[in-house]
Length: 198
Image (cartoon, rainbow, N blue to C red; front, top):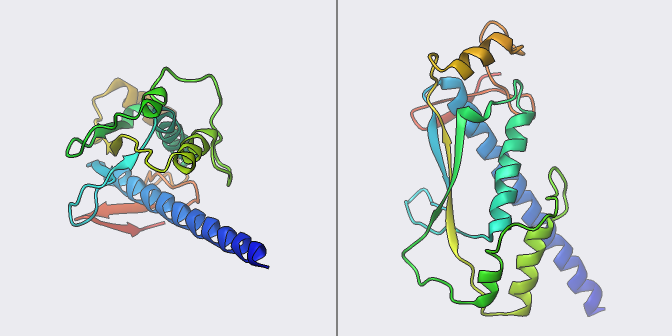
């Protein structure tokens, strides 16, 4: 009886965790979309709270690869797909804490494995399962903390790549020339507020 209870509780926790991840991804997508559409760009910092408290994320190199691929994949789902020179993705090391000395963490920083990351799926990627398994097995396992910085660049109409992009692209809304998210919604961002406009 207690086993089935634990299983249902675990399933509920997994569902809530996925819901939080989906909400966070949609939120980032809409904010980034708003920054693209106002052409002034901006910076999204993941791992920093609204009250400027820095928390960061414990990430292996493989998880960083996964995050980059996920962001690129999301921008490729926009209508029109966002060119890579419109944005930058960086990982900033959180330095106000003791560096992890765990040899297992050093193992996770080795050159990339030749495994494909799982994108656009409900299941956890192998890189997340790898770290989760280590955390479950070694209770004192600590990873290095990082802030994820997504920079949406200011529109530059003098850049040849941008000129080429604007000449070849088909906009969903040719009159306003707005990017829309992977869900087909368009946003605009002004004075730190994201508003839906399409």
